[in-house]
Length: 119
Image (cartoon, rainbow, N blue to C red; front, side, top):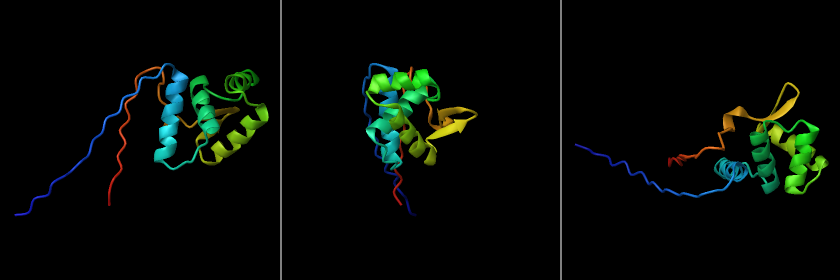
């Protein structure tokens, strides 16, 4: 008779964050690391901001991003180009949005389960 033991390691981490932008940035940072996307801090900020604001297409939203993160509109265009190529951002009609597969409700608590499978 042969028995196998399933050894699963579980670690829990908890971090309290103050606002939805910070929560979204942390989530996309983790998503980037786990999926080896190699997103820069500014790219993570843009994705998080876009997820919360709904899109990054309108001038007033872009201006808000520039003010919040001390950057320029041409920088946003460069970031969008790269993020569209890797399908993090998508064009839906005339709007540039975050891929719906990676959007969460950042106004609520979030619990992530990450499985790194050996073999």
